[in-house]
Image 1 (tube, rainbow, N blue to C red):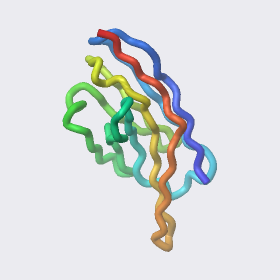
Image 2: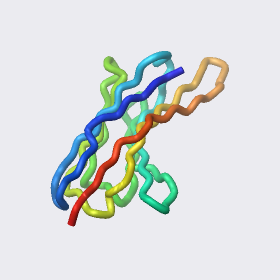
Image 3: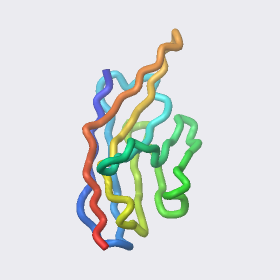
Image 4: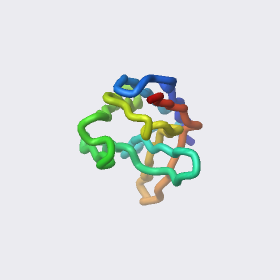
Length: 120
């Protein structure tokens, strides 16, 4: 099992910045991709950004140029620097980790989420 602990959410004015952190613990070997997803009220959970073990990143179009995902493999941690925040970025942000075993079995892990609220 992998446990994910997020931190760094909060309330910020439009145009401001926040940095989210997520630390993985437990069976962290063979974690491949780590990333962030978000879910706004009444909407489905959506991808924000992911980073693979080798460093390849992927971003939602809505956050490109404003958010930066980074990863510290030694600490089993992933970060999301969010700049130029907009009210539409308001959501619960969830950390995700993807683990693939040697037999090909894949596991998906989620944190409990951290609230990000952007006021206009």
